[in-house]
Length: 264
Image (cartoon, rainbow, N blue to C red; front, side, top):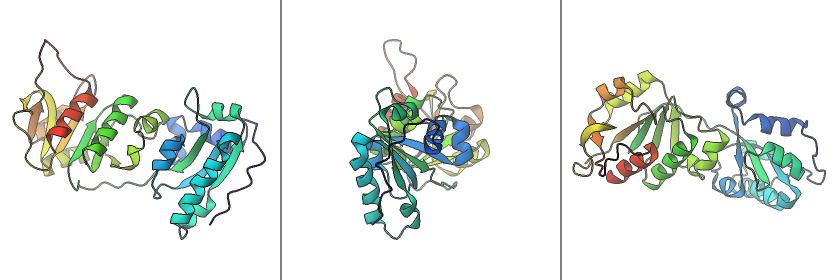
C-alpha cells in the first residue's frame, strides 16, 4: 500500500508548482502541451477507473481523509501498477482550492490526471460520430446518454475539448465509461462508408417509424450548422425526428438521445 505524502503542511501560495499547473489546465493549450486534465469533485474521482493515471491530488484540510482514501483504494486494487505509487496528495488552503477549481463553490478535492490514450479503431457496437458539437453541456449530456444506452464508442470531429473542466463535469463520470476518439474528416468519411451510418437531419425518414434494425453509427452535427455535407453524402441512412406545433428543431443532445434510445 502506498503511503500518501505528508499532507500536514498546507500549501497557501498560488505560485506553488502543483497549484500553478492545476490552474493552467483550465486552458486547452496547456492540456494539449502536458497531456493532463483536471478532475474535480468526489463523485467524479470515485467513478474514475484505474486505467486513468493520477499524477497528484490537491485537497483542502477538510477533505484530506477523502484524498487519502481515494489514493489508497486505487493502490490496494492495483498495487502492481508502478504509476499508482507515484501519486501523492497535497493539502491546500481553501483560498488556493478556490483559485484552482472551475466551480464557484468547490467541493475541496481535485486530481490532475493523464489523458487516456485512444487510437482510432472501428466501433465494436453502436456508436456516435459528433461533428462540430461545440457546447460543453451538450457534449456532456450526450456522453451520459450514450453510456446509459450502452453505446461503446464516440468519435469526435472538431468538437469541444472533452477534457475541458466543463465537459468533464457535465459527463458526471461517464467520460470514462465510453471510449472516445478524436478523428479527422478523412477518418470520419471512412467510418460513414464502412459502418451502418445514419445522419440525423430534418430531411430524413421518420426514425420513430423506421427504427434502426442493426448496429448503427449515428452522426450528429454542430448546433448551428448541422452535419457537414461530405458526411451526409457518404452516410447509409438519414433519419429525422417528427415535430409538431411548428417546432423547427431540437437541441442536439435531445435529438441524439431520442435517436440512441430508438436504436436499443
